[in-house]
Length: 320
Image (cartoon, rainbow, N blue to C red):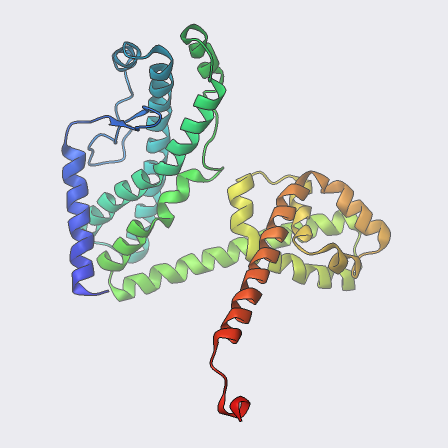
């Protein structure tokens, strides 16, 4: 990374600290009139101040229904933000242990983690706004409170949304600046091994479940095992995002359905195939979407290749 890029990242982090140190301010969305507040300044990931009843009353004095929705989102956002910050503290502790960081490096990562967690909240805010306002459209302010309380545990952003901060570019860029090349190599090595361990474990338990349910022959088990392992390589992140840590029998076996039916039918008997499809039918919508995406990506790649071929200048041999 260039010297200028390093300066830009550290300047961004410093500005983020200054902005966090200012008094909390409401950010009003022009279309939805939604009140959102950035997190309070803090030097640890301890839970922050929860919105008080006074905060909600101030909001309610303006527009009863809209203010109730905004106050409810504000309360949920605070809890969601703290959950994400707590996860980022786990990530920082991991880096500190593995790479033996000094105090200055830890402080820099702490600041970047706060910024990454906050930026990861954008999608959460957008989804929560759409969800609550769509469901309370036309409701009066007297019944809104009861409706909102009934939707207090709605999850936005997927089952592993708290981990989004770790994937933000701000966090990755900061790691590349703060850590030495040796520390980066060490950390990436550990992350890669963890990913391989997850793939091996998930594909193994999937195959064990498939074998117990379908009673595979050794040859079938070997051939299907290769497909299931590759499915885990390609789709484990999607599965984790969609189902979280929910390892139900049908879901585990459905990993085989990442493959086209024709491929599975070449390995399984008709009875085994029907038994598999019947047991995993509840998960077809997920794998159908993955297959559709794969076909579209393949089609797009073929179209790009064809266009590149058509736009390339003819060779001398073709001209002659």
